[in-house]
Image (cartoon, rainbow, N blue to C red; front, top):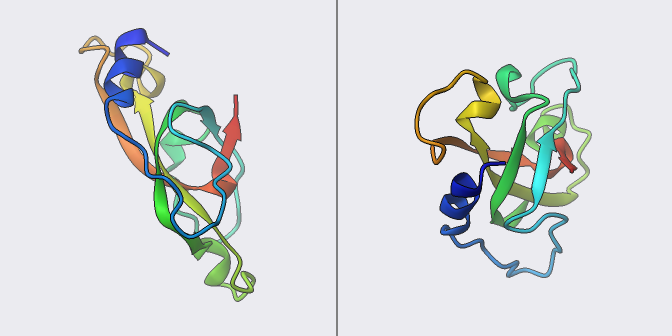
Length: 115
């Protein structure tokens, strides 16, 4: 990712886990959003699947997986949501705006892959 984008994203402090659940990812980690295509309801926009980004913050407290909970398959387990910064050039390769421009979105842990 672009150095200016990383610097802008790093200026937003991440949240430290307050309830003892240990997040898998931490602010500054490089990730890729999964490309899977589940049947039914899911919360990750199609245009972001397969895109690279960076974790800006861990969202507290840990939460249930809303996608699984809707089908009664969650059994109360909790993981984290993360605020992910995706550079605009990752979404639109021909983007000519500032390298600091990006999209921020909260994504559940099961959708993220470490890169």
